[in-house]
Length: 193
Image 1 (spheres, rainbow, N blue to C red):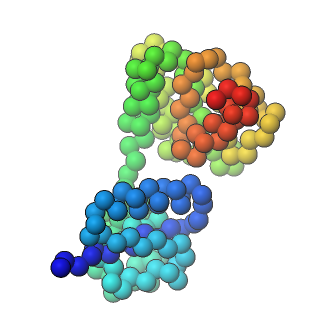
Image 2: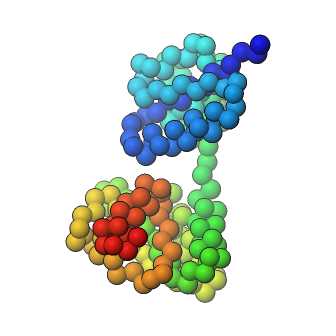
């Protein structure tokens, strides 16, 4: 009988959205009955013995010092180590595909919700926004931009009121799935979803 291929997934932080993403990865990999997935969240759990591959979202140069005995393939989610295979999100393509999808479904009004930290939009969010707006404008559709991110919305906040005032129907593209869940919560709060 063939042995299992052991893959360790290590996170830099623990959040509800990351855990949901990792559960999705785990479910996907369960389709491969010979693969065993191990998820850890803390550096002291990063035991690489008996692991065939690693998926890491931590600074790899730091981690490589802690695991010199590991010689298997390493995938970097943070794309910060030239010695590893790096996952790159094609934000331009994501924005264009989102606009095309909404317009193909008949939405003539679109909106975008970014992700910000300390008032500054994250680069990937800005890239998705720019390509979403450009793709929509090429098809003759304008895009309404939210007055802020969803990081700390409350009833009566500017973004919550913005969602309430959007024309209907409106296709809302959010920079992340977590932002989309927050926008959906706002819509439910206002009784429009």
